[in-house]
Image (cartoon, rainbow, N blue to C red; front, side, top):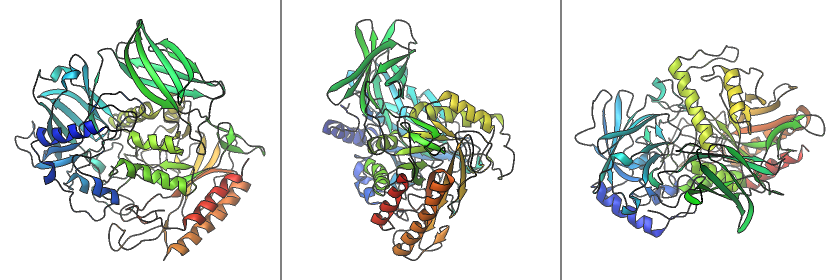
Length: 609
């Protein structure tokens, strides 16, 4: 049980988790240690079974009571055809790290011929009696099935989006409750969205993630409760539109919402459950990278005069659009003002956690470094992060271009769209919808990127139009890199090392979705001791910084003279054998002269008005 305000963890829950983890799985925490790996970050030393991602995992829909199930679980790898859960398990794994990560304590691949099994027991607090109990998974890659006390309570396909199981009816009246999870993951032998994961990592292809890789947790909710909600700001009308879904549908239930600016009420409103209503925010404080102001939001579910459920959230008042600047050039605009968007390609890999940052501080650190270097945007590349990554993007103030993870077949620059089989198309569309539903309320996300470099590109027109209809509050980049179909809000090309710009487009802003890739391996901070690579390689920090500044001088002319509206530099960090990061893979060194980089980066924003 935990009392929480977004990211606060009380000492009581820490003590409780220590007892639960030590007693419920039959594993003593001091017996755990990380597996041997090629490289580790400084945060790895802070990871232990009684202190592993203890933060509240869903800051935009927070309730006071919850129980964190991260820690030691039993695991087993068995043939995919095995009909039932194992009689004996192979050892212990530290959740939420993938079985392929050193911080899991295992560090092995499973393969599509096998399933990965998890088991642990938990105790349900007595105070949860009479309520609905949910078991939440932040993300499990790829196909998961869940049992509680031998009763199947749910399943999910999709490696990047959360899912929830109602376990109430499977719980016993007292004693420990057994949770069993099975996972099957084809990685690059399947057609599902998977991003850069492959069984045989090399070059720009990296170690796969299989199994649980985000926080697992339980919470009690009232029998009648809030299921989800959408918050959509409208700065032009000085209001925010709210739509709340409950498990009981509409009926007589009402929603009461209050926005707060610190201790001051900034606006209140009411509406029917299942229907949208407006909350007026007079003279709103606008959210931007320079001033990432967030309003607190309290949403209460009312049955007559009785409050039956409530959640805490937050939102930012911001608008993203495409419009012409004073010179008549199409630009990306934030809050109705032209803004050159510039940031790194961000793959979200970690040497010790693979897809999972070792700690929340580590997750925050990457974003803070990008801000400190003078960037105002991040392109999250063919990966979807945990909710807390977007929370930090919201809090620190950075614009996010969110890629849909790629999968299936490739096409060339001049090829037609592929024809996906029905199951492949369904997987893509389902996970895309889940991603938009999950992260819709984050003000940092300003663009959805449907396809990257022709990978899995199908029905481009249909997908683009669906995203625009489903989430009209954001821009859509239908095809980053090539295979442009003349639709969406931007025309995006890639050029290495570049820079370059697409031809002028009368209806869309022109952007450079990837460029740079300047490499510098630093001994002692690489995934392997030799055969590392970048698109171009340099000998030291001074050479690398000079080359970067030379690229940006060329970029300036494209902004001022060609109308380039945004650019994405490759990349935030080195990733495995790829050494073209602004930082080393272990995040120990920023490879360029930081003051020179910040000065040239921030100078770009003065080129358009």
